[in-house]
Figure 1: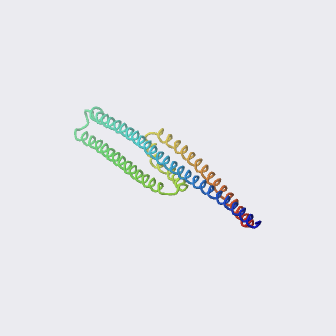
Figure 2 (figure 1 turned 90 degrees about the vertical axis):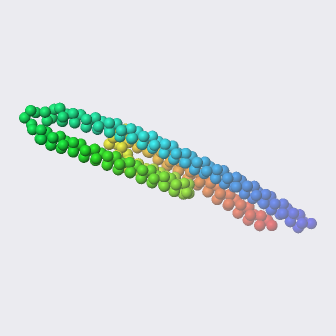
Figure 3 (figure 1 turned 135 degrees about the vertical axis):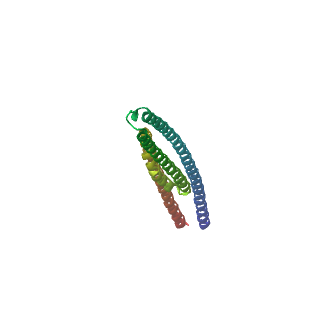
Length: 229
């Protein structure tokens, strides 16, 4: 009878350990589900931030286009003024022959045409570079969406730091305030991203420590149960 009682007690204790193990497994599954939901929320937030970033870039491109239009209007006005000056004042001397006036006027017009051509070429290069950068950013965002979460954060921070460097340089020649604001915003977003990365690494470390402690507790409980059995 004593052996039967000991066997029943050992069986009951094993059942209690099994129940605890099942409860621990359920808690671990709930924690993993919460972790997955949190990661999905972070990814959704990153996509939202990418969309907002693209909207800000679109606004900046519109401002850049407005600045280019204002520059073009000023250039046209300057050309008109130069032409009027050439026509009315520059070569209006009575002793200057008509052929010389025509030659000088043609030279001035040629220089104006060359300047206009160079400006159009420069505008086309800037537009081509902008479109190429937009395509590159779109490809990088697509790649980052497929990366693991931690690598996505680091890649996002690294890519965003160098995305618009050349564009900020070109736009600074037309409007310095846009470049300064973009640089300040980039530093702020990089600081926020780094802080979030450090916080998530800390959370992952804490989870690892808890899992290790729980594993040791289970191993110890299993050893005691085996010894008692």
